[in-house]
Image (cartoon, rainbow, N blue to C red):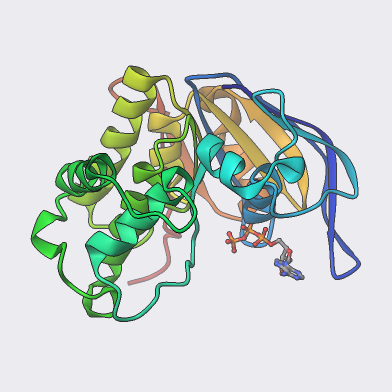
Length: 261
Ligand SMILES: Nc1ncnc2c1ncn2[C@@H]1O[C@H](COP(=O)(O)OP(=O)(O)OP(=O)(O)O)[C@@H](O)[C@H]1O
């Protein structure tokens, strides 16, 4: 399902946070929104989720305005793994994952065997089965992050929105999560939108990058075009070396200044 944003302005507490932002994420593609802290990346995702009302411009998910959709219909269309979710202490990993099935469970009804099977399968795919009975407040940071992703995947929505999905993960789990999302994108045609600070990881997995800077799109397109040393220098204030990796996608490394030892 295609996600389209056109000429979006969002204000928060009377301050402009997004200005004239446009992007198009065709069905079955992965778009990564990158940019420095405070650039407006999470706000853009929240506008796409229908959680922030634009001052101007439009958002369309599969032709629908997410702001206007009833929450259950919206949740069947778009799944979201936030950066800092509210995790009810005491709730188990399995029950939290099962919350992803809420849009399919009738009001005052109970989850079905299929809902439980979907939750179990997602936990298996994320290496979390051994933690299924563990309360959320007794997990490591990386385990918590994978559980939040598990809940979003259990939602089985055609659009997956992930806000910084790998920040707390070790390199093995980063690869596991990125590969899993990429497989779902290819096999089930999911449209993936993610913010991500690791520019090399963004360039490796995304079909397109959108570089946000001070609330505006500074560049967008294939990773090799967006991730240049000049752009990273200008918008992140970082000195980096960008070179094509083995697969031709850009690898971004920090350049250390050569001072006296
Ligand atoms: N609820 C809010 N009310 C007012 N201002 C907000 C609110 N949430 C975020 N902002 C401001 O909006 C701007 C964009 O924030 P946002 O969280 O979208 O940035 P970001 O690019 O995701 O940053 P980061 O990389 O640090 O997560 C920031 O200046 C932030 O202080």
